[in-house]
Length: 194
Image (cartoon, rainbow, N blue to C red; front, side, top):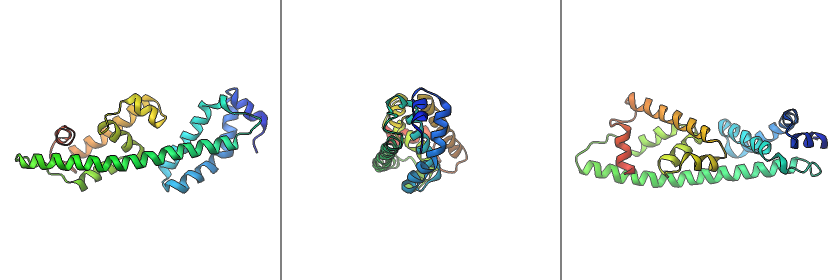
């Protein structure tokens, strides 16, 4: 059990108090998130998001109420947002595939051999970690700005930029290696986003 004074110290911005709370609850938060995600990488991101939110909103914590309920409420909120993101991603993927197929058919009708199918497209997108993939898809397919993505994912704009740079590097590498595409990536974007 975390003492009242530790919670007050957290509220006052003391990092040693945060470390104690993290050490005490991190394993419980990890188990809770892993139960739903079944992914070590996603669980790690969610647990980091939970504790980041605790730190950022520490002024709202009432030391008299303790931190356990606040922490679990935060975890439920983060998990709820993650579930919504997964559902949205699946809906976006379907819409994206339909647009892609339509653009691909138009290209074939005009005599262009795009050399790619939906399975290949899925494989390329699946090469990205889940959060990076979601950020990339929402930026490229939904047209969300870095600021909107930062707010949506509760991360900084620099973190969004980092995800996009890394995603583009992976895609560029796969494209250069010829592993997935016979057309340059920007041509494919014109086909199914234009």
